[in-house]
Length: 364
Ligand SMILES: Cc1cc2nc3c(=O)[nH]c(=O)nc-3n(C[C@H](O)[C@H](O)[C@H](O)COP(=O)(O)O)c2cc1C
Image (cartoon, rainbow, N blue to C red; front, side, top):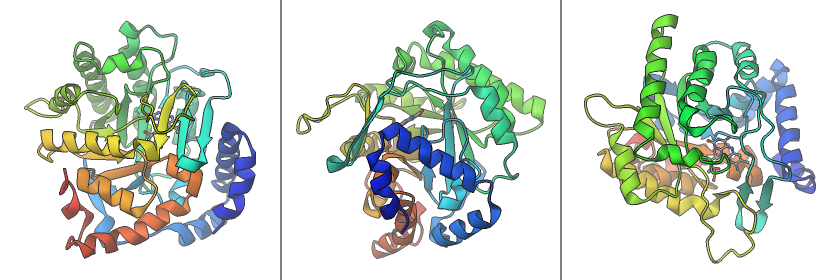
C-alpha cells in the first residue's frame, strides 16, 4: 500500500541514494517500537504451512532478506517487522572499506533487473558487532552473517579474513554464509575452485568449532553461497562438500548474481553482477542440481529473481527449503514478501501439499 506511493520518489533518485534512504527510514523505524508493531501487524503473515525448523533454528516463514541490502546491520531491528522469516546481514569484511567508485548500482525496470558492482563497501566487522549486540534477544527471526574478504587481502590469505570476521561476530549470528561468489571483488570467485575451497572451508569450520567451545554454544550452521556461473562439474564437486562423514558445510545459498548477459538484453552494458528476473531460471537450475546431487538431504536457500509467489513456489519445487529476495524488493517493496506468504499455502494446497516442505524438490 505504501510502496506504490514511495516508488516514484525512490526511482527519481540515483539507485544507491534510494537504497540509503530506505535504510535510513528503517533504521529510524527500528527506534520506534509502537510504529514497528503497527507495521508488523500489517505486513506479517503466519501460517502453519510455512513454518520450518532447519539446523535447529525456527523459521516462521521461508522468505528471507538476501545479503547485500543491509550490509552493516543498520536496519536489522526493523526488518523482521516487514514480514521476513529470516535476515542475512553483510557481506561483512573484517576491516571497513569504501567499495568501488559510484555509480555502482543500475536498475532496469522494464526487465525487473539490477546490475551492481558494489565491491563490499562496509563499516567492517567491529561496527556490525556493536549493532547486532544491541538487538533484541533471542532474535525474532534467525539472522545470518555473510562473511567476505577485504579487497586488498591477497587471495592466499583470504581465510584469515573470513576467520577474523567470524571471531568478531560469532556471538551475534544464528547461521554463517561463506560468500565466495560475489563477482565484484577481484579473484573472490577463484575461492570456489577445487584447489581452494576445501582448505578455506576447513579453516572457517575449525574457527567455528573453536568459538563454539569458547562461547559454550553449538557451532553455527555453516552455509556456502555460490555463483550461478559454475559448470555442472563444479556444482557436483561443491555438492559433495556437504556429504559424507565429515561434511564441511551444512547447506547452500544458490545463487549470487551472474556475470552472464542474456543476448536478448543488449541494454545490460554495465559491468557487475546481474540480478532479478533474468537470473531466475539459471538459479533454479543450480538449486535443482544441488538438490539432486545431495538427494534432498542438505537444505538449500534459493535466491535469484523471485518476484511473485509463483516464482517462490518454483524455487521450492526446484529444491529450496528457504528463499531470499533482493531485486524483487527494489521494484515491488516489502509488500512482495506479504504477497508471497499469503499466496504460497494456497498454491501448495492446490497441488496437494499441506506444507511447503512437502513440495520441496518435487521438480528437481
Ligand atoms: C545491490 C546488490 C548488492 C548485493 N550485495 C551482496 C553482498 O554483499 N553479498 C552477497 O552475498 N550477495 C549480494 N548480492 C546478491 C544477492 O544477495 C542475491 O544473491 C542476488 O541479487 C540474487 O537475488 P535477487 O535476484 O532476488 O536479487 C547483492 C545484490 C544486489 C542487487
